[in-house]
Length: 414
Image (tube, rainbow, N blue to C red; front, top):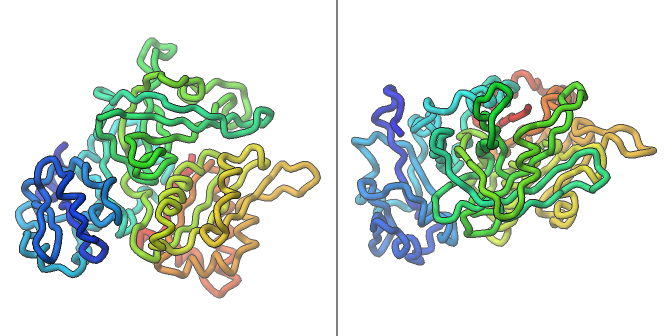
């Protein structure tokens, strides 16, 4: 895939972070094209040899290998530069360019339309956090999808719950399909619509971390709700959601993507994450939380705070596993709106109850905020932020553009 003309000389250079590299030689041994070498000081990557295959990413025990910078193709960081580093170079203006310049203009029309709707609450796609890993985008198109095999389909909500939500696991075998937390994939339902045309793809957020639903396997998971009514409550049958929720182990699925280059988690030490979601909006939050959980022993991350809303506990995806997470690892705040005998409580109510903590995180430049779920939740959450800021002598409408400028505020609602 080629870059748009205005970025024709832009390249994404693969680097190794010398601050956290433990010189174990795993990356050099596993690289299939001999792009990695070392001296007595640092392990380095040959720009002209590396083909971005990602074979070295998962085996790296520290994550040092998953480091990238946007550079001019004619002036990448040389081996001499890399050998001399004690730490990675600072980001430049090139790094502020959207990480998906390679192929972004070729995104399917339905993906662009869905993205516009999802990110409207923040005024369109924002920049990714400066420490986010390099995303690969639009590798597989509707014209040339990849085939995945279903290896798991588990109902997450109770049998008597009004929401039928499933945890789907897809395996890609030996074909590369690199994804990051916060990215989405497309699924193409088989068959044709009422006009005899092939069904358009539907997008689903990835619910597993970058190293797979099962660590170090080439797989991923999705959180999918069976659609049986429209937003007005009228009976309808979602073509893609019912197809996905009915999949059996061993079934083959046509997949496109991955998509998304901005709704990505920060990776720098000490970065905190505030997550606000409802229903299947929990998918990217689960991916980020699981990424941090698997790396708890490294103590690399800052605080995690979650606001999670549903009608009732039995309708909340991953409710059981969430309750088992250590309280010093993640600060969880549930909000249930349809529990018999209790007042209706929404995520914005839970946010207001934690006003002191929320305001502190809004003010913290190392904290990144993510909102995901139905459009109806968005206004209430923003109003809660506005009230909390006002109570603390601040102005949300002035703070919000600052958060966007620093890539600290991310919204995906549908």
